[in-house]
Length: 227
Image 1 (cartoon, rainbow, N blue to C red):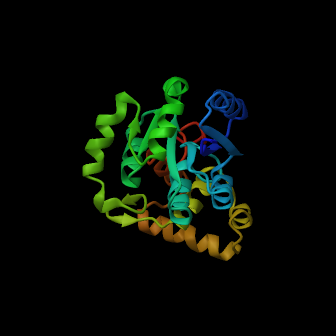
Image 2: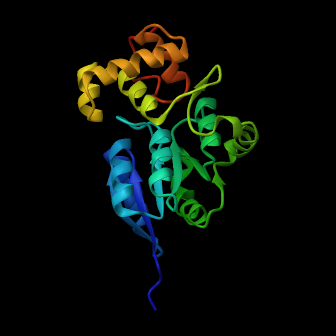
């Protein structure tokens, strides 16, 4: 009798890391890697197409960060579980993982020994966190119920589309490129930009970038020229 295997999508922007994870998981008889994504937008698209049981998701992803990608995956494929990976345990990341109600978060430096176990537990609906952050996630989860659904500032919640626009702007993409990326008009992007600035009470792109870094939407090394 054949064992039903846990299908996994690897979402990580560094190819060498994806290859390492795939190689590791190939030795697990009950786990099958069915796809790989190099950015958050591709992870959303492949999750919709492949319907994996678990997405192993790097938080710091280009084009669409892993947190927002996970939010969209949960909306489009609610049976798919997301296991987050990060090189950092910054409070901004822990806060957002708590807001999402995520069931798994591994630090990359400890993931090799725990990855297969974490995938099995998350697929069952159980929680699996790197020990050093499990208590912090639990504490923040108790405070996160009023923030479900998006990043906030002064009580203002950002929509998924606003988070997408914010990340692309913070990554340094001009409005024309943002419009092409999202399949909308230049005018629509400009409207989103103005709405973001008004909602967040931020009045320049540098400020939006600093906010995106503080909230863990992009990594701090994305725009080194911002001071």
